Length: 133
Image 1 (cartoon, rainbow, N blue to C red):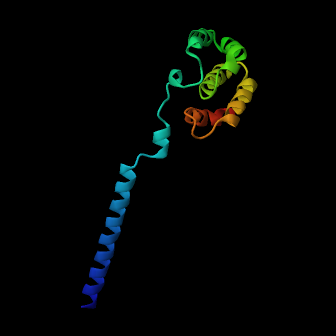
Image 2: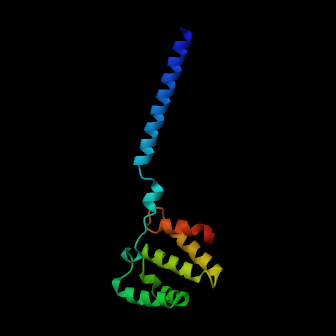
Image 3: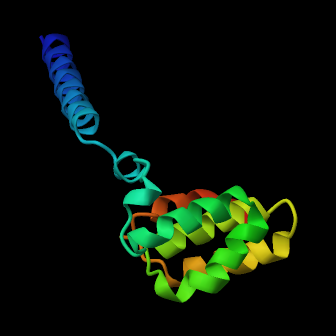
């Protein structure tokens, strides 16, 4: 008789534990993770902060490589605001890496210092962080 009661208690405990695991699994499966929500790629052209008239100049500068982008940032950087400025600077960081890693790290540190976690380009900066710190 005691063996039957112990067996029933063990079976009930296993059933209860299995039910709790099932509920936890459903919660995890249904909620999108914060990383997935932030990892959505952002179209740089849709970011606010740069006048539309500068788009052509930006495209030309980007086509000229790191030197063209550096000139663009030097000439128009004060007229461009974040988050678009941060996105352009991160483009420059990626392009200049092969020629001047110190310059890339300097610009990356500058961008990171003024970036907040709610910025649309924050996830991109986090991806690049391991390379440039």
